[in-house]
Amino acid sequence: MKIILNNSSMVPIYEQLMDQIKNEIIEGALSAGTALPSVRALSGELKISALTVKKAYDRLEEDGFIVTVHGKGSFVAETDKNLALEACRRAVEEDFGKVILKAQNFGFSKEEILDIVSIILEEN
Image 1 (cartoon, helix red, strand yellow):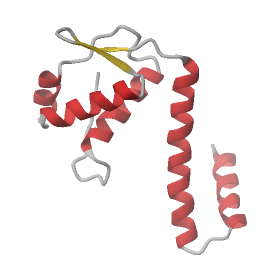
Image 2 (cartoon, rainbow, N blue to C red):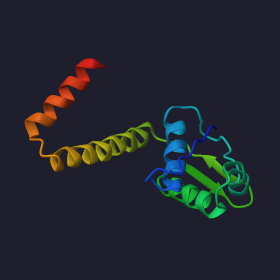
Image 3 (cartoon, helix red, strand yellow):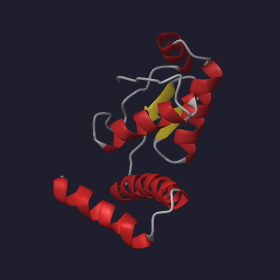
Image 4 (spheres, helix red, strand yellow):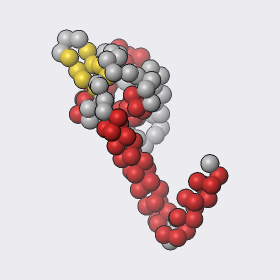
């Protein structure tokens, strides 16, 4: 598991950690049953607070991506593909929402925003 955190990002460290673990699970890099590093080990490796890692693990468990077995550790949960796809959809919608709000704050109209999206889609 390769985690890269950006200390200068406006996104909190625990969210960066959560997002990267979630992406690895969704993409299949971490399969069901795979043990995650202990809170202490990961915090030491990333040089961040154990509380930050614990918060990320707790949120991942709430979202159904991992399960924690007392005394044994945290493991990738058996994920429903629909759950994973819904999580991806929410993340994309959230990102689009931020970009649309930024464009609106700059004074772009709905048509101009849609034109930009169309151009980007054609280029990719």
